[in-house]
Length: 138
Image 1: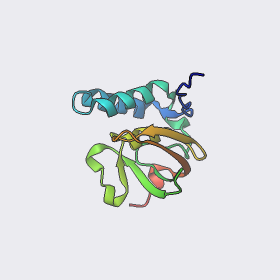
Image 2: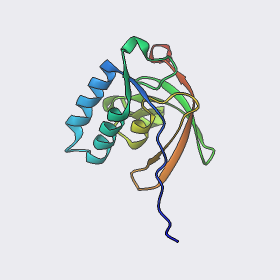
Image 3: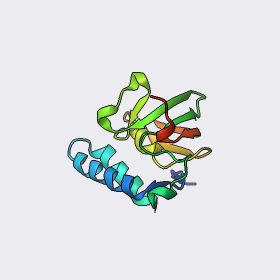
Image 4: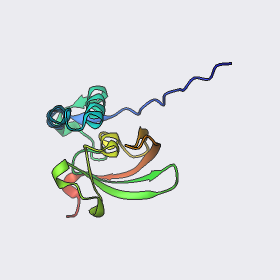
């Protein structure tokens, strides 16, 4: 009997057209500096369902969204997804140019995603809630 490694199917994601264009430019500009993360972000952008900006639901993770997630290990966190220059792990601001940031984009509450940490560890999380960027307290 031969055991094969099965890939977990990724959940469907939705991204607004303007944000998709900005993130594509960001990832393309970072391919030489951060090839693994940039290429993974480009893969996520390629598989996303694009919608007009006004049609992105309020509970979809986008840039500036605050979200609460729980890991399979039971750890819970509230973070804000930001561009690299705004990242501050102490303040819970996660860069889109990190493996977890790339995994979060486009998700909605109830969706679970698996991704690989920079050290190669497989991780999984489930989004529990999302606050729209214009409703996040600063």
